Image (cartoon, rainbow, N blue to C red; front, side, top):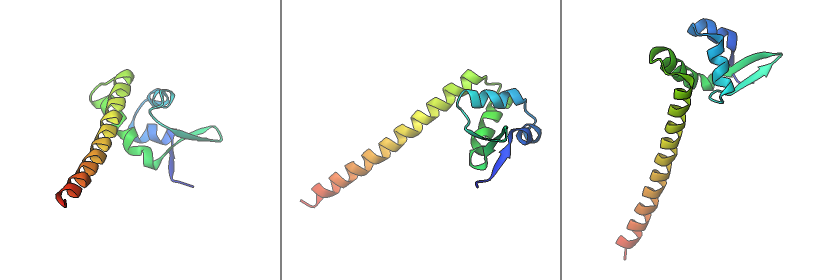
Length: 100
């Protein structure tokens, strides 16, 4: 089983409101596991949780703002991946024509 941390532990460690955690889950920004009615966040998702927590509490960004920022960053990441793939194809084509 993967490493995980309970919602209650996160609330204590990060000093956040339990409703904020639940709102992140309800909006689909966080994926959790539930075991015996206890909600768990996987350790691999901690950086995402910390980012949302920092944006919300330090920068005072509300949940809709978090959703917009998250979606924009995902789109940027996808576009960067497409750009890398296109650059690789262009480089391969360029190398092919240099040999002619």
